[in-house]
Image (tube, rainbow, N blue to C red):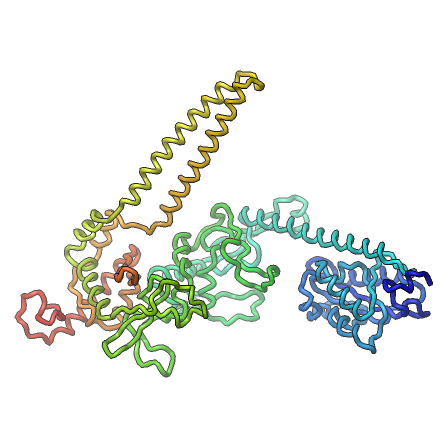
Length: 613
């Protein structure tokens, strides 16, 4: 043997024996990309051709799975069972690595068609190669020279080049495929099963060659009653602030009118609506008319069906199919998706044997830190409190500056809410109060932004005029003239200033978009659609109160820094009649509750300030 053959860098002596036992390793992707049966037969045949005469394949290890999977997840699938592969299988890559360190192993060397058949990523390939090397088991490939003289440097160099090229080709193919998928989405074509409420409209493939093969593309179009159900779900959520469990219960009362979603394959079908099915519909942006892709990480980024952040979603440039939910409504519903999480509808007790009572303003009192304030009973009465240290998961800096506990008394909330509804929602002077509030609203910041916006636009017009003047002087002059060169520098300076002004103007527009919607005088007509009522809300039944607060989307925002609270209601035009009827019912019930009063009729309120006398 040569000097290199007996050196520390040489191959094991077992490879120079009269008979060398070989383990063959194969791998192929799923049937979506190739025929696993033919691929594995080809790999085995190519390996047999290059083996030295004294080498014999004694065991076969192969998998039908993606080569880009992490090594710890490899070899666990059973996809090979679906194909008639005439190769006796001794296990997968995991079984090969498990047997290699044992003294009783059945092989002396491992061979494969190429190192990319072990794994597509070089890191995983090197990990397998390193594990086998520690067990004194060399690895060969049919597309590399098998030299037993001892020299391995040339073989390693060629192997690393092949691995780099293989990894580049896979990544380049994936990037090109991703670009094609994004273009497919932006042109409005759907991928996968249409969401509930839509059906696929099959179109001829725009590529004539693919169309001749029978390939098609599809867009979305509404699916009758299913589409109407999706729109109804969004309205219940937005206008009535219903939870997903309540919506599911309503839908299940009439499954003929509201057919439930059917999962792919139908194997997991429940034939009924669930909270998760309602939640999935409310979160799906495709119902806005836009085509959206990459909402979930199905095969990449280490996630299996994991939700991607909205920043990674791919949207079409404009609506490409009929919307079932207006985009503004979808954005409002999903603005704070966790705000109602674990908060039930109705006024019943919590489904917990320890629950003894419920709270009138449950889920409606919000702290400035973004948390719902929870009901709390103390000897002095009922309070709502925010206690961030109780559930900040060991992060004391998450709510830095927040008081240890913020309290808000329920009786104060009830008094102000009752006065607000009595005066500004159902009171006779509500229009005048609304318009007066608009006149006194502090709009100085908005006016300053508009004045600055006008100054910027005038400056942009001036720059455009100067640039036109500079171009007119430079068009007829010699490009090498120093004067023309100065004009070019002047034009570039004006362009730099113009871009800076455009950026400032865009920043002002962004600030304006982030401002909360301000009411305007034309919305006072909604108030006129409501009846004039005298309300004592604290006497009304809890069910009516909860329904009224849901319809008007009542929220109480507590500002702990200023020791103030903001009360907000919304009067949706679609439900203003329902609000009026419910207010009338509430007024009637509260009046009946006060009938025991014996004060003389005609005065506004009795001495107790409670009954509507």
